[in-house]
Amino acid sequence: MTELVYWLDMAGVIVFALSGVILACRSRMDPFGMLVLAAVTGIGGGTLRDLVLGVRPVFWVSDPTYLWVILATVGLSILGFHYIHRLSRVFLPVADAFGLALFTVIGAHKALLLEAPGIVAVLMGLLTGVAGGMVRDVLARRVPMVLRQEVYATASIAGGIVFVALEALGLPALVPIMVGVATTLSLRLAAIQWRLALPVFAWVTIRPAARDGGGETPVRPKARVRLIRPGRRRGGKDGRG
Image (cartoon, rainbow, N blue to C red; front, side, top):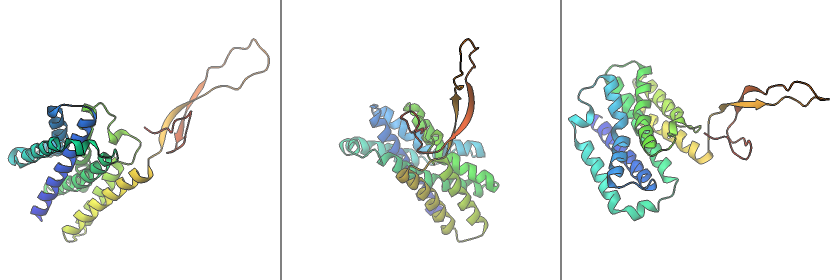
């Protein structure tokens, strides 16, 4: 089972590194920029997880294979640049969804191995899944996916909860891993396909009603919080974050 977790972790690094390469290509970065985005996406979340949990040294220092995998991913991507350039814009969020699902379970699994409480394990799964992508998006001058209105962090939390709950039931080790991955992945892909999103709270200015006659002191507009549901259009825009 330890070997299975290791290869799932490696697969997550490859997928996330590839998503970093794709975003670097769309941002017109040079090969070094591609390498930086691939690295921070592939190992950034796991690095923060290990630092928070007090693991020394962090995983890629004790096992440099992760670094070689990232280098190989970037190198192959440069050789196949024309194929990557033609990929649909849907490919990036889909690849990111696979990485999120794998890293969520890997992070929660490692926290449980270190005897962390269940709620901490769920948070470590979330940190492992979203931190690298956040740094990637910030470096590429994009609003991080986790801060948008789309279902993203919610999918990671749900998958982490399912994984930790099944582990607590003492089921065979393969079951919690597969079900946890499937939960996060299915929620994220459903959000991409059907544009599922959480409601947004926004300030809405309410202007006072017109009064009869003149000479009265104008009343200042009031503001209140309105709940804007996903897909609702205001002023020609759909209100998405």
